[in-house]
Image (cartoon, rainbow, N blue to C red; front, side):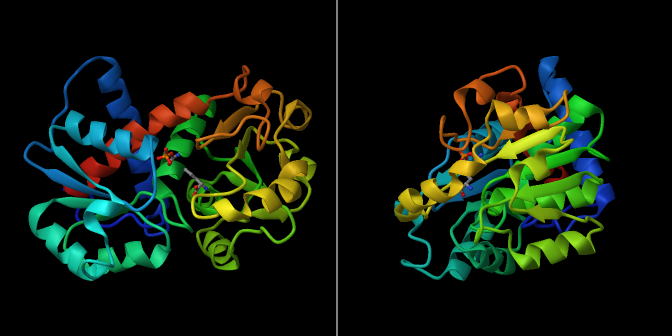
Length: 306
Ligand code: CP
Ligand code: NVA
């Protein structure tokens, strides 16, 4: 059995560096199998419940397709359907779903919601994004970096923008794989001190600055995300002003390493957090990165369920 069998994936910090490497190795192997058109269906007869309290393209479609490709089935449960926490407690939802399905994926607002599900459900619970973590995104990001540079180890990754869920998971992922992580954030938008501490405990030494040029210097991956995340729509106007100096543009990319790639979890807003020239230009790997959600999550599902 896999060392990940039966476990949850809430933050990535629950895994050792060896376990993260195992997921990435498996993801690369499943990607080549898929490229070769070779079927791999170890999850026949298994189902995944997918709880979405927020919208999604990549997470939903990659999990649903991934489950199907592995021989299993996925069930989409939108917010109107479940009314989690309204029709019944989060815990009762988790306990019930675990009686039907083999794993639960959940996209939620507060991170405690996914923790509550995991505590209640006797099957693996995967965080498909909470307000503080997005571990599946970080796995795809690391896979993309590995494909480009051979290994994440020693690669400087610069995140420019909000110290949010995506930045947190990337910081933890870098700590677990030996990548160097720097973030440039506007005043008042630093990553959470708890997550920074956690990254230190995992062996990382994240560099925090308010200067985008300082973070980007020598970086081989320059990463950004939206300025207003899901649930922060009313702050969008105010954030736009504060975040404008943190736009990833050609000038900022020119301060990174010559071989630098541009990454973004998507969805993206051209001419806000990134210029069209950068995201649609030769350094961009955003669609490889989006594709890698599929391979990374298939590897995760396979390792958690077999
Ligand atoms: N990157 C990501 O999680 O995309 P979706 O919100 O479309 O799922
Ligand atoms: N930080 C963004 C990521 C979307 C994939 C959000 O939470 O909306």
